[in-house]
Image (cartoon, rainbow, N blue to C red; front, side, top):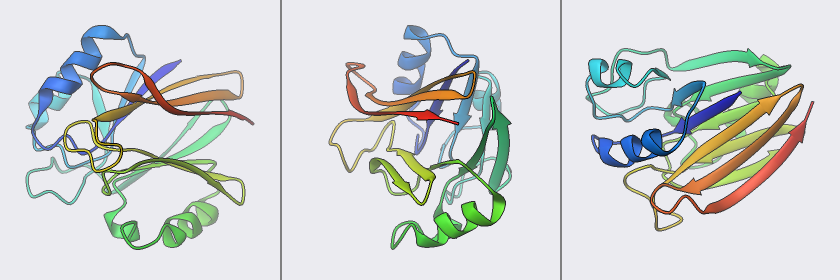
Length: 166
């Protein structure tokens, strides 16, 4: 299964549409701060969570899903105070028995592991802080194995990647 994970669109659909026209995905996860109408997200089959932007659809704040043996938390991260520390987010993930956390809000692409929990931020697909180019995630997952890559949303070169076995 190939999954797109993106965050912090802030109304700029151009990079998202470019990714969607160059790759085929089985699922699309959005992590908030869309700045887009619900109809625009639905037409792209986005399964999402709400961010802290005033213009986000009325999605849930956190969603937990299970895919191929992995328990995955989707969140924007603002309610877990991720700008200051990821500790609160990690503790919430531990409490929920989550293996992988996808979060946004900081506009900083990051893959880190802490006590067996993978905290992964796709960065921003439109207004990046780090790296200086827009980024998104492709997650290939099957048979209790996942490859997660953070890619440049313009050139599609790989910025960071990790392989996880369950």
